[in-house]
Length: 424
Ligand code: SDX
Picture 1 (cartoon, rainbow, N blue to C red):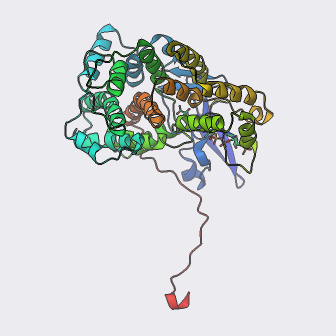
Picture 2 (tube, rainbow, N blue to C red):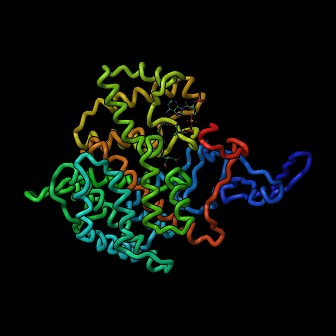
């Protein structure tokens, strides 16, 4: 398949076809408007490829997810989150020397400039940590100059990865009125974050291994997901040659939406609502199917996965393991499992291919770990950070990148002329 033909207004046009390494086929319409004067129309971009990428591959029908060719099941079972960051950003799994150097860099860039602590003073305890993260990550550009020099870009990539977890932990401590716990160089990336979250100055806090392993898994599963809403936002903003920090700040804002990364918070609030309503999950299943109801089964459905989200499968098993290891009995997990069981047999969900997505079980685990619900999407952002960075780096390194500027079909008033107010 090398070309595609289009007949418009009786005239035939031919466009090249692009075939990817997994035999995905795209019609290259980059000359469509010049040749035909017409544009395509694809609200939500469900049928539109915005770029070519070598980072993450998803097959929605087969439930396949691979990071740089490695199946998510293998990475989740065998890798660390730091290895996954290296793989996504630099394209290969690090050897021992590369991993040691990368770990050292991430360890020795975790501190914030002391003046950044003053930023937190302006936030109330009720300030949503996603608002804080978006502002703080963008504000890193006020401390660290950016340039097109690859070494500067790489140093700022390290700073982002290292300081994001400090900013996230500090936003949590701010919300509960506790003193900030500073990063420790003797702890792993994930253990250090948990220590900054849960340690208090008055006593020694030993990060439980079960929490460290659970967080490592959760961050890996969220690390990248090709051209989702927030990643496309990072590419869109970065295409104007905006800085890495500004592009990532925009990605945090896009992720916050309840239809995207904010869904993990919405799922728990939905399950709590069902529990408070006597656990009548069938009532809420019926609401989800009712066209007159705005209720949606949060954590269900996906634009790409039309079979199952492999991350949800891994997280469902992990939820049982983590809660058992922590000795936590959470009735919300039973409600979630009952909802899934009913949905997978219900024609409304089956016909629309609505299955649990990554957000359906993740919140159950965060909750068992003692993470407060308004920090769930912050954890999603921490996990997605290497993916956003890798995609931004790939976009900026691609000489064919142009500023993103979609077109439109205008449906408003045709030309008319101003009349003085006395004549309106
Ligand atoms: C993430 O893109 C990514 O990769 C995202 C992500 C990542 O890693 O980056 O995977 C992370 O964002 C996961 C999705 C988290 N969001 C939610 O769980 C929110 C609930 N789900 C939905 O709102 C919805 O399923 C989306 C947003 C996920 C997908 O939306 P689409 O593809 O635009 O689908 P749609 O809204 O057009 O729905 C198609 C049909 C509709 O019914 P009909 O009009 O055909 O009758 O399915 C129905 C919808 O009403 N539907 C749902 C539903 N999701 C879709 N009905 C009830 N409950 C739901 N959750």
